Length: 275
Image (cartoon, rainbow, N blue to C red; front, side, top):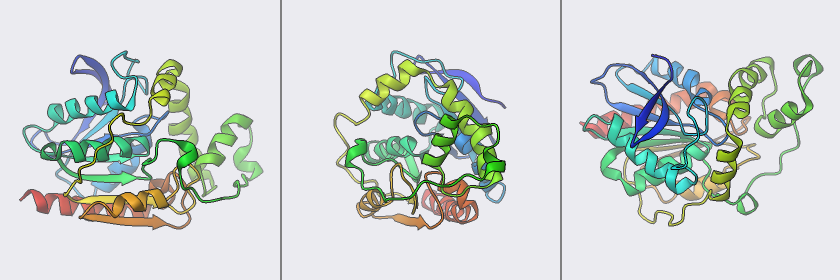
């Protein structure tokens, strides 16, 4: 099944479902400006060794194929949509959530506020501090992009890659050009402006999610860093936290083997907790 539009709580959302209808669900939430493609292929490689999950990939309104919606103009409203998605895809059982960057912000809040609906959370380079100036990020020199990799690319695109990446090779730049750039270009400018203007939750959750939790951070992440994610991990009683050397904001790609191993362990923990 390819990505298709589906109405959830009256809102058009992009959804692709992979796996058996009776399998437990894992909801995948992408980061800001990008879409489901930042997670889809890397996660599918994880599931080849972990069958038995129904994977639900989402394009939030204004991203990917999903048209912008007046009902989703803030992180608060995006979170309300996540609640509706959990009810839609769970099949009467709690669903696990994989969230990348902004998707991690939404995933953690959903788990804290609706623990009955969430079986576990895996946060990949999660955004935990909405205000950019307040983030505790490392000082990382800009990466140098070899001429043969940068050939023919626009300077603005190269600047975006430098912000995200730490590993600079043909494979990483190829993923950037095939999955990240098209998503950034497709994102609706008005939706981006509305959501970024209301990026922080009005009432951040104060409760603690007690289920299996995984946080993977990039040691060289210029966007969200890794220290703020550790502060979140300290609050979660069942959290595994890993900060990966040699990785930027896309640690799940730049250190894919290590991240995949951590995700497989987390999936096993989620399955065990559900028994």
